[in-house]
Structure formats: C-alpha cells, structure tokens
Image (cartoon, rainbow, N blue to C red):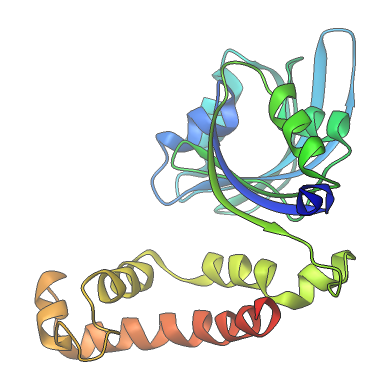
Length: 237
C-alpha cells in the first residue's frame, strides 16, 4: 500500500481521435513528435510538433485537412522534417490530463503507426489514476510498463536522463527499420538463447538477404541498443 504513494514512472500506448494519431497511421516511415503546449483560447488549443516523413508535403497537407485542425503554421522545414505550430479544436488532450493530475512528460510524446507513445511521471498512484480519468472516453490506453521510485532513487529528471530509459528511446529512434527488423527477429527466434535456437544463416533467409547483410544489420542494432540496456540494468538492480 505504501508503494502506491510513491512517485511512479509509467509507459503508455494511446489511441484517440487526433491528427497526431490519425495521420501517422497512414504514413510510411514517418512520425510526429510532440514538443510543447503553447496555450489555448475559448474554442482552440495550440501545440508545437515535429513532423518527419519522406513525403513531407503530403503529410502536412493531410494534417491541414484533418477535421480537428483549424490552422497550421510551418516554423521550420527541410526535405523530410518540419516543425509546426498547430491550432486544433479544444479537447481533453494528453497534455491537459497531465496538468490536472500534476504529472509530467519524461520525454516528448511520439506518434507513430496510429499510436501515441508516452512516458510520464506521476506523484503517486492516485495522481496516475487522475491522469487516466482526465482522458476522454475516446482514448484507448495500453499500459506498457510501470516503475515505482524507490527511496534510494533520485526523483530528479537528471536521474531518468542518466538512467538509460530516455537514452534507450533516443537510440531506438536512430535504429533503421531494417536494423530493428533484424534485431527483433533474432530476439523472437531465439538467437540469443543458450543454446541458440536458430543460426545467422537461417535468420538471413527469413529476411531474404545474405548472411553478411543480416550480420551487418544486427551488429549495427546491437551497437546502438545494448550499451544503453546495460545502463538500465545497473539502475534497476
């Protein structure tokens, strides 16, 4: 019971009626990252977002045409990335639920494949429940992980930055789709088990590439992800 009064870090996946989840659902190799809440009016709410996509112009046009969007201002734009200021209909957003529950984002929300992925810290279980209750009924929520902060753990943001939780997410962003596919395939097929349940050659055949090409994909994914996983293990043990 006492544990539920401790601060808690929660990782969630959300789906709801919002351009942030609707547009990425139809994006190939694209994503939207939430940057900041910038204010609200009688009937509108304003946020900053980062949009990344190979077909960026088409994605921005779909955002403008989304029924919840009133106006989009492009602040900065390159070939495949844009920072935008969006005015949308006033609704019970994730950011608003955080304010009501006195919780905070541990990192910017990421919208990819029709899903909003967030990591938040709430002062207690009651605050986390208040966050959930503040979300609109249209939200579908999936709990991915939950970690209560122990007495000997620091509760500062620096702790989480240094612990590896956020570094792992940042590293995951750097892993290409093919590298991630190779790494997930190796994990799922038992390549890392003792004894191995599958060979490198068999994994390469499953991806229809050469053994050398698969080995290179796996090596690059491991180089980005495994050092940070070691940091996390040191913290949680």
